Image (cartoon, rainbow, N blue to C red):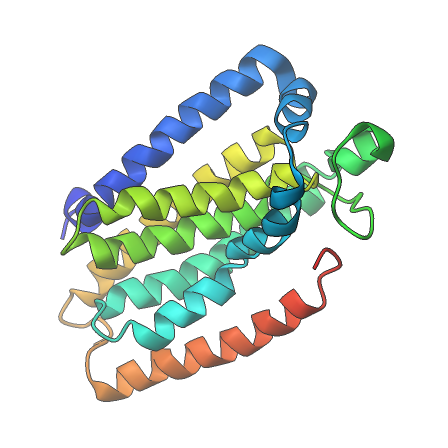
Length: 242
């Protein structure tokens, strides 16, 4: 299966994200890295203050991804395998970016005075900001879900992308990331996912490749999803901005 055939069910998802990337890129290009944050972050309300700290958990990919693994038995097995490998690869890439290549790119709470920004987190997050890991994982996980749903309902990719983009936006809303962080993070998440899906699809399609089909394989993915769900629920409960 070639690249375009494997991602065709997610074409509307990718197109919606393309529009988001262009808009976000123009915002950062015109107002700058800090200026774009101040503009977006200043728009808030009491209602959204209650909602956004919870919607940001959509960026906890293991939460959404693990549920997908548990109930996605009709999903192509190579998609489930690529999802797990993508989450691992994204974690490594984001960790390397923050700790090695962009270690002096700090979060808004360190760049600005807390009194000057809209900040919801109970404890000031002043560590590395670039790129956004939540945005990368949210974009990746919903990409794989759009592949599953897009096979029967192509336009589902639009609302799945919008849900994912809201998770990205929430990171700026609660004051822990810049628009440039979520732009690059979401782009990185999707690029990694497409690359790994292509590799997995090619390898499993070979005669000497790993055979992924069968009830035992479905049970394995469900158990993997259950384990990831327990881990991520613990992470979510212990987050300081709940």
